[in-house]
Amino acid sequence: MPNLVEIVDKKISQVRTKSLDISFNELLDMYEDEELIISPDYQRLFRWEDGKQSRFIETLILELPLPPIFVIEIEDGRYELIDGLQRVSSYLRFRNGLKGKDALRLQNCDIVPELNGYTYEEFPSTIKFKLKRNFIRMEVLRKESDVNLRYHMFKRLNSGGEILSEQEIRNCTIRILNPRINEFIIDMSNNINFKNTTSKLSKDDIEKKRNEELVLRFFTLKNNLENYFHPFDIYLTEYMEGVADNSINFDYDSEKIKFEKTFLILNNILGAYVFSTKRFKTGKYQNNFVQYYYDGLILGIQKYLDKIIELNDYNKLRPIVENIKDNEELDKARTGSKSNIKRRIKIVEEELEKFFNDN
Image (cartoon, rainbow, N blue to C red; front, side, top):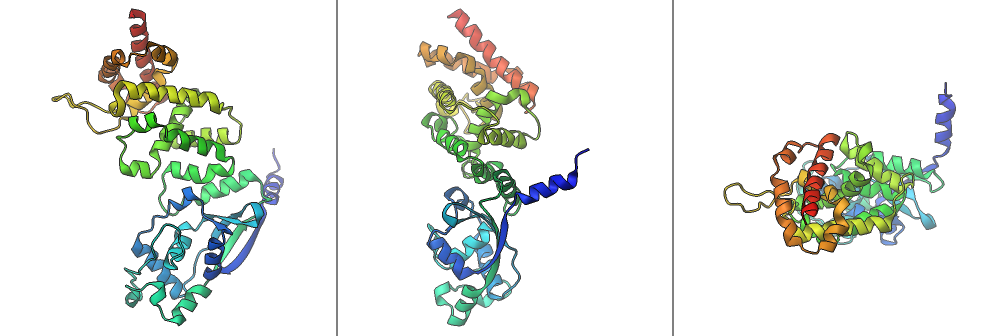
């Protein structure tokens, strides 16, 4: 039986932390001097609407208690924010110091409604001093801490608070283990053929990084379908973690080639409508994105990538793909079980095998 006390004590010993009480004015100075880093991916997640930002400023003015913020220590002793984005960004914006954002004019303050309509510069000096001198506890995870523990701390902190998509959380956390897989997925999501074939995703989907999750989905299902499990979000995350910490072998060069071939083919066959449904009466494509079409086609053509490119006549394949999407058996396999994904793949493979045997 393992000695749980020793195991826990060993993990605790691998975490190096310190606590600092710093003023909000110091936070602003640190941000402007690039001593406090809010990464571009993370900063895009600043989502509090103006009223919520304003009420936080009201909280500071009234000197109400605040929960701590969390940072990790990176190179050169700088800090990277990992929890507290909404609060820190609201203050920076109010002070007109947040890059890419206009200064905040208060609205919807409900304890002191007289604050509404003011900017920082319009406040009397006494209130400015209150804001500058208000302190917050900063919990620092030192760079000597075990990288995996740093990652899991980041992951858990960023699973609460504002509602983020799973891919947004992955983007903010997994780069602690190894940023290469994040950068690779983002790069693939910008591939011109991929962007066109997934252009029917909604604006909200794109903002929440569903396009990047579709890239991850491609590699995870293609390479790790046999280990498929529910919940699917955790299945995707664990694959990405495995690539990041090198416990899963991932040949970036060859994977990039396969990805580019896949979406070159699909874009040339049906372009932006390759993952869309047709209207029964008019025969025109709808502006939608169908997940089970995506899974079946991206995986089902893998055995035939080189044959299709060598054929170099995508017009011949257009009716094949349209027939596949009209296949009732494919429609029956629309739900996201492992067996249904395998069925989708088989349907596509059988149609392509028949086509190449006849040609």
